[in-house]
Image (cartoon, rainbow, N blue to C red; front, side):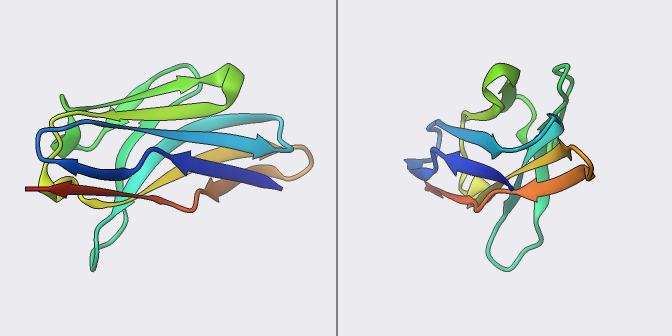
Length: 120
């Protein structure tokens, strides 16, 4: 069993900052790509940012220059530093990971989500 536990969501005013964390736990060999996705009410879940084990990153255009994804491989944890937040950033934020489990290959795992609300 592999679990992703997110934390750090909350209510913030426009222009403010939040830092999300996602920690992986359980039985696995390694984790390849990890990332953050978000889903606003009535909308589909969209990619926000991803990071490989070696640190290569990819961002959705709307968050470039404002959000920074980082990773601590020793702690199996990723972070999302969100600055200059806008009301349009309001959504449930989900952590995602491609986890290698012995005998099972890679498994895609999702966290339970953490709500970010940006007030205008």
